[in-house]
Length: 235
Image (tube, rainbow, N blue to C red; front, side):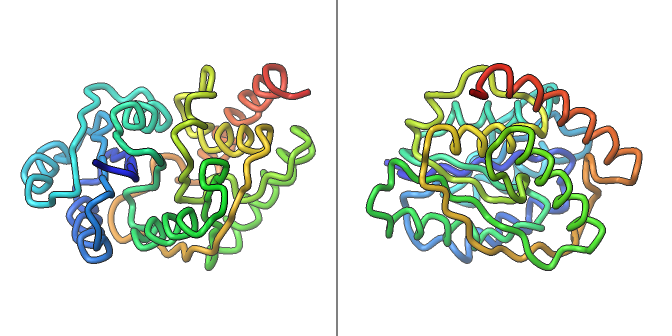
């Protein structure tokens, strides 16, 4: 039986997949954790790499999404395949260390009310430009949605399965991180943030953070979803 299920969406991460599997193998020292690597419609050799390597790691499972319908869709698809009592996700780009997943699980274990907790990273050591962008977006979302929402896209995120069952019409794009944190705030969960180091990518390129134009597109998309979120859930 698995108690903790961690979903990792992989979009064109053929070079990072071996690294993340190796790192998880070094930090997982228990048999109640499953890591679901979601090949989220990759256009590179991610599927081939997953099929070759995953059978060598007993804690890992490869899940195939044939067509990429968005970052959020890949995560949601994986969460619905997961077996654990506690669910969560993190990234495959090695900017979020697998050891942070173990730290988050330990926080849950040491909490007096583990079914009501939402554990989320808080990124450190980021470039000033990215800190400014994240701070600005966090400030806007906090004011607009009337909830304190900081470092919304930080990883990992882990929570009890019962929280997922409350979700209605979650987004299929990068707004999923905003949706989950906002829902946790509205439901009055105990939100526990802990520091995580956020280094540069080793391989590959971000699928959205590729320059000013990409940031502008991300902002526009997030603002549109924020408006929807406020109408549907904000009171």
